Length: 260
Image 1 (cartoon, helix red, strand yellow):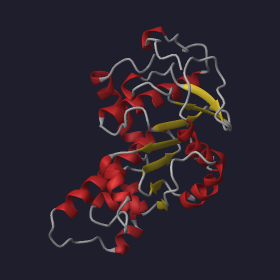
Image 2 (image 1 turned 90 degrees about the vertical axis):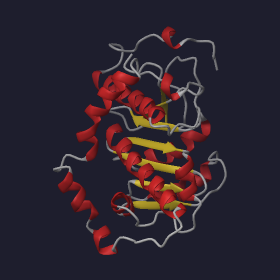
Image 3 (image 1 turned 180 degrees about the vertical axis):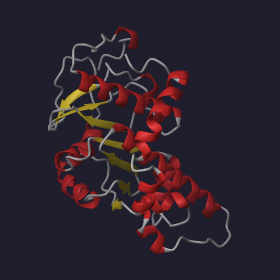
Protein backbone atom coordinates (compact mmCIF):
# COMPACT_ATOMS: atom_id res chain seq x y z
CA UNK A 1 0.00 0.00 0.00
CA UNK A 2 1.30 3.44 -0.93
CA UNK A 3 0.69 5.21 2.37
CA UNK A 4 2.58 8.37 1.43
CA UNK A 5 -0.07 9.49 -1.07
CA UNK A 6 -1.88 12.61 0.13
CA UNK A 7 -5.67 12.71 -0.03
CA UNK A 8 -5.35 15.91 -2.04
CA UNK A 9 -3.26 14.05 -4.63
CA UNK A 10 -5.98 11.52 -5.44
CA UNK A 11 -7.31 12.46 -8.91
CA UNK A 12 -11.03 13.21 -9.06
CA UNK A 13 -13.23 10.64 -10.79
CA UNK A 14 -16.08 13.08 -11.32
CA UNK A 15 -16.94 13.01 -15.02
CA UNK A 16 -14.86 9.84 -15.50
CA UNK A 17 -17.51 7.51 -14.08
CA UNK A 18 -21.26 7.47 -14.73
CA UNK A 19 -23.47 9.96 -12.93
CA UNK A 20 -25.11 7.11 -11.00
CA UNK A 21 -21.76 5.72 -9.87
CA UNK A 22 -20.55 9.17 -8.86
CA UNK A 23 -23.71 9.76 -6.80
CA UNK A 24 -23.19 6.40 -5.07
CA UNK A 25 -19.53 7.25 -4.43
CA UNK A 26 -20.50 10.56 -2.83
CA UNK A 27 -23.14 8.91 -0.62
CA UNK A 28 -20.75 6.13 0.42
CA UNK A 29 -17.94 8.58 1.22
CA UNK A 30 -20.48 10.59 3.23
CA UNK A 31 -21.47 7.45 5.15
CA UNK A 32 -17.83 6.81 6.09
CA UNK A 33 -17.44 10.41 7.27
CA UNK A 34 -20.70 10.18 9.26
CA UNK A 35 -19.58 6.93 10.91
CA UNK A 36 -16.48 8.80 12.08
CA UNK A 37 -18.56 11.81 13.12
CA UNK A 38 -20.84 9.63 15.25
CA UNK A 39 -17.85 7.84 16.82
CA UNK A 40 -18.61 4.42 15.36
CA UNK A 41 -15.29 3.93 13.56
CA UNK A 42 -12.60 1.52 14.72
CA UNK A 43 -9.54 3.26 13.27
CA UNK A 44 -9.42 1.65 9.77
CA UNK A 45 -10.90 -1.74 10.64
CA UNK A 46 -14.58 -1.65 9.73
CA UNK A 47 -16.28 -1.37 6.39
CA UNK A 48 -19.17 -0.08 4.33
CA UNK A 49 -19.75 -1.33 0.80
CA UNK A 50 -22.10 -0.24 -1.96
CA UNK A 51 -22.97 -1.92 -5.24
CA UNK A 52 -21.94 0.01 -8.36
CA UNK A 53 -25.23 1.00 -10.02
CA UNK A 54 -26.12 -1.07 -13.07
CA UNK A 55 -23.93 -4.02 -12.03
CA UNK A 56 -24.43 -7.20 -10.03
CA UNK A 57 -20.78 -7.96 -9.28
CA UNK A 58 -18.99 -4.64 -8.77
CA UNK A 59 -18.72 -2.84 -5.45
CA UNK A 60 -17.13 0.14 -3.78
CA UNK A 61 -15.19 -0.20 -0.51
CA UNK A 62 -12.87 1.90 1.61
CA UNK A 63 -9.18 2.12 0.77
CA UNK A 64 -7.43 0.16 3.53
CA UNK A 65 -5.36 2.47 5.70
CA UNK A 66 -7.32 5.69 5.31
CA UNK A 67 -9.15 6.95 8.38
CA UNK A 68 -12.88 7.25 7.83
CA UNK A 69 -12.82 11.03 8.14
CA UNK A 70 -10.32 11.10 5.24
CA UNK A 71 -12.33 9.10 2.71
CA UNK A 72 -13.50 10.82 -0.45
CA UNK A 73 -15.72 9.76 -3.33
CA UNK A 74 -12.69 9.39 -5.63
CA UNK A 75 -10.59 7.39 -3.15
CA UNK A 76 -13.11 4.53 -2.88
CA UNK A 77 -11.88 1.29 -4.46
CA UNK A 78 -13.99 -0.56 -7.06
CA UNK A 79 -13.76 -4.35 -6.70
CA UNK A 80 -15.50 -7.53 -7.87
CA UNK A 81 -17.10 -10.30 -5.81
CA UNK A 82 -13.71 -11.95 -5.36
CA UNK A 83 -12.29 -8.72 -3.89
CA UNK A 84 -10.13 -8.07 -6.97
CA UNK A 85 -9.42 -4.40 -7.69
CA UNK A 86 -10.95 -3.24 -10.96
CA UNK A 87 -9.23 0.15 -11.19
CA UNK A 88 -5.66 1.41 -11.04
CA UNK A 89 -5.35 2.56 -7.43
CA UNK A 90 -2.46 2.68 -4.94
CA UNK A 91 -4.73 1.42 -2.18
CA UNK A 92 -5.48 -2.14 -1.08
CA UNK A 93 -8.61 -3.40 0.68
CA UNK A 94 -9.14 -5.26 3.94
CA UNK A 95 -9.64 -8.96 3.06
CA UNK A 96 -11.56 -9.68 6.26
CA UNK A 97 -13.92 -6.84 5.48
CA UNK A 98 -14.93 -8.07 2.09
CA UNK A 99 -15.41 -11.70 3.15
CA UNK A 100 -18.51 -10.64 5.07
CA UNK A 101 -19.74 -8.14 2.52
CA UNK A 102 -19.23 -10.32 -0.56
CA UNK A 103 -21.24 -13.14 1.02
CA UNK A 104 -24.21 -10.84 1.51
CA UNK A 105 -23.96 -8.94 -1.78
CA UNK A 106 -23.81 -12.22 -3.72
CA UNK A 107 -27.27 -13.34 -2.57
CA UNK A 108 -29.07 -10.24 -1.30
CA UNK A 109 -29.53 -8.29 -4.51
CA UNK A 110 -31.77 -5.86 -2.62
CA UNK A 111 -28.87 -5.06 -0.27
CA UNK A 112 -27.11 -2.38 -2.30
CA UNK A 113 -25.28 -1.21 0.82
CA UNK A 114 -23.82 -3.25 3.69
CA UNK A 115 -22.53 -1.44 6.82
CA UNK A 116 -20.51 -3.06 9.61
CA UNK A 117 -19.31 -1.57 12.92
CA UNK A 118 -17.20 -2.57 15.94
CA UNK A 119 -18.51 -0.13 18.55
CA UNK A 120 -18.07 -0.72 22.28
CA UNK A 121 -21.76 -0.89 23.09
CA UNK A 122 -22.57 -2.91 19.97
CA UNK A 123 -19.98 -5.53 20.87
CA UNK A 124 -21.07 -5.45 24.52
CA UNK A 125 -24.65 -6.37 23.58
CA UNK A 126 -23.44 -8.93 21.04
CA UNK A 127 -21.67 -10.69 23.94
CA UNK A 128 -24.84 -10.81 26.06
CA UNK A 129 -26.56 -14.19 25.89
CA UNK A 130 -30.03 -12.82 25.14
CA UNK A 131 -28.84 -10.25 22.61
CA UNK A 132 -31.14 -7.29 21.96
CA UNK A 133 -33.82 -6.92 24.63
CA UNK A 134 -37.19 -5.21 24.08
CA UNK A 135 -36.41 -2.26 26.35
CA UNK A 136 -37.05 0.82 24.21
CA UNK A 137 -39.21 2.19 21.45
CA UNK A 138 -36.17 1.99 19.18
CA UNK A 139 -35.69 -1.70 19.96
CA UNK A 140 -39.03 -2.74 18.45
CA UNK A 141 -37.86 -1.78 14.95
CA UNK A 142 -34.61 -3.71 15.28
CA UNK A 143 -36.27 -6.76 16.83
CA UNK A 144 -38.76 -6.85 13.96
CA UNK A 145 -35.94 -7.72 11.50
CA UNK A 146 -32.96 -9.10 13.44
CA UNK A 147 -30.68 -12.11 12.95
CA UNK A 148 -27.69 -13.44 14.92
CA UNK A 149 -24.44 -14.98 13.69
CA UNK A 150 -22.12 -16.88 16.06
CA UNK A 151 -18.47 -15.85 16.22
CA UNK A 152 -16.07 -17.98 14.13
CA UNK A 153 -12.91 -15.89 14.42
CA UNK A 154 -11.72 -13.12 12.12
CA UNK A 155 -13.84 -13.36 8.97
CA UNK A 156 -11.24 -14.61 6.50
CA UNK A 157 -12.61 -18.01 5.41
CA UNK A 158 -14.98 -18.52 2.51
CA UNK A 159 -16.59 -21.49 4.26
CA UNK A 160 -18.18 -19.09 6.76
CA UNK A 161 -20.14 -17.30 4.02
CA UNK A 162 -23.09 -19.73 3.79
CA UNK A 163 -23.69 -19.42 7.53
CA UNK A 164 -23.55 -15.61 7.37
CA UNK A 165 -26.09 -15.62 4.56
CA UNK A 166 -28.32 -18.09 6.40
CA UNK A 167 -28.27 -16.10 9.63
CA UNK A 168 -29.06 -12.80 7.93
CA UNK A 169 -31.79 -14.28 5.73
CA UNK A 170 -34.08 -11.50 4.51
CA UNK A 171 -33.49 -9.31 7.56
CA UNK A 172 -32.11 -5.77 7.84
CA UNK A 173 -30.09 -6.20 11.07
CA UNK A 174 -27.47 -8.83 11.92
CA UNK A 175 -25.74 -9.08 15.29
CA UNK A 176 -22.33 -10.69 14.87
CA UNK A 177 -21.78 -12.38 18.23
CA UNK A 178 -18.69 -11.14 20.15
CA UNK A 179 -17.85 -9.01 17.10
CA UNK A 180 -20.21 -6.18 16.22
CA UNK A 181 -23.22 -5.00 14.25
CA UNK A 182 -24.22 -5.14 10.58
CA UNK A 183 -27.04 -3.56 8.60
CA UNK A 184 -28.14 -3.73 4.99
CA UNK A 185 -30.26 -1.39 2.91
CA UNK A 186 -31.45 -0.67 -0.63
CA UNK A 187 -29.52 2.63 -0.42
CA UNK A 188 -26.53 3.94 1.51
CA UNK A 189 -28.90 6.22 3.42
CA UNK A 190 -31.13 3.31 4.47
CA UNK A 191 -28.22 1.19 5.68
CA UNK A 192 -26.82 4.14 7.63
CA UNK A 193 -30.14 4.97 9.30
CA UNK A 194 -30.59 1.30 10.20
CA UNK A 195 -27.18 1.37 11.88
CA UNK A 196 -28.06 4.58 13.69
CA UNK A 197 -31.07 2.78 15.15
CA UNK A 198 -29.09 -0.38 15.94
CA UNK A 199 -26.37 1.55 17.73
CA UNK A 200 -28.93 3.58 19.67
CA UNK A 201 -30.68 0.41 20.81
CA UNK A 202 -27.38 -1.03 22.10
CA UNK A 203 -26.45 2.19 23.88
CA UNK A 204 -29.83 2.30 25.64
CA UNK A 205 -29.59 -1.36 26.63
CA UNK A 206 -26.12 -1.05 28.14
CA UNK A 207 -27.25 1.96 30.19
CA UNK A 208 -30.50 0.31 31.27
CA UNK A 209 -28.72 -2.83 32.44
CA UNK A 210 -26.09 -0.75 34.24
CA UNK A 211 -28.84 0.97 36.22
CA UNK A 212 -29.31 -2.18 38.25
CA UNK A 213 -33.07 -1.89 38.81
CA UNK A 214 -35.86 -4.11 37.47
CA UNK A 215 -36.58 -3.45 33.81
CA UNK A 216 -39.88 -3.10 31.96
CA UNK A 217 -39.99 -4.86 28.58
CA UNK A 218 -42.11 -4.07 25.53
CA UNK A 219 -45.10 -6.31 24.78
CA UNK A 220 -44.25 -8.76 21.92
CA UNK A 221 -47.54 -7.83 20.22
CA UNK A 222 -46.22 -4.30 19.76
CA UNK A 223 -43.01 -5.60 18.17
CA UNK A 224 -45.08 -7.51 15.62
CA UNK A 225 -46.54 -4.21 14.36
CA UNK A 226 -43.17 -2.41 14.14
CA UNK A 227 -43.03 -2.48 10.35
CA UNK A 228 -46.44 -0.82 10.03
CA UNK A 229 -45.51 1.76 12.66
CA UNK A 230 -42.26 2.59 10.85
CA UNK A 231 -44.10 3.18 7.58
CA UNK A 232 -46.59 5.43 9.35
CA UNK A 233 -44.03 7.53 11.20
CA UNK A 234 -41.95 8.11 8.03
CA UNK A 235 -45.07 8.61 5.86
CA UNK A 236 -43.96 5.75 3.66
CA UNK A 237 -40.71 7.44 2.64
CA UNK A 238 -38.40 5.50 4.94
CA UNK A 239 -36.07 6.97 7.53
CA UNK A 240 -33.17 7.12 5.09
CA UNK A 241 -34.92 9.35 2.57
CA UNK A 242 -36.21 11.62 5.33
CA UNK A 243 -32.96 12.19 7.18
CA UNK A 244 -30.17 11.84 4.59
CA UNK A 245 -30.37 15.40 3.17
CA UNK A 246 -30.06 16.84 6.69
CA UNK A 247 -27.17 14.52 7.52
CA UNK A 248 -25.34 15.68 4.40
CA UNK A 249 -25.87 19.29 5.41
CA UNK A 250 -24.41 18.49 8.84
CA UNK A 251 -21.46 16.81 7.17
CA UNK A 252 -20.91 19.80 4.88
CA UNK A 253 -20.56 21.93 8.00
CA UNK A 254 -18.37 19.58 10.04
CA UNK A 255 -16.41 17.43 7.59
CA UNK A 256 -16.44 18.97 4.10
CA UNK A 257 -14.46 17.49 1.23
CA UNK A 258 -16.02 14.03 0.99
CA UNK A 259 -17.62 14.79 -2.41
CA UNK A 260 -14.38 15.07 -4.35
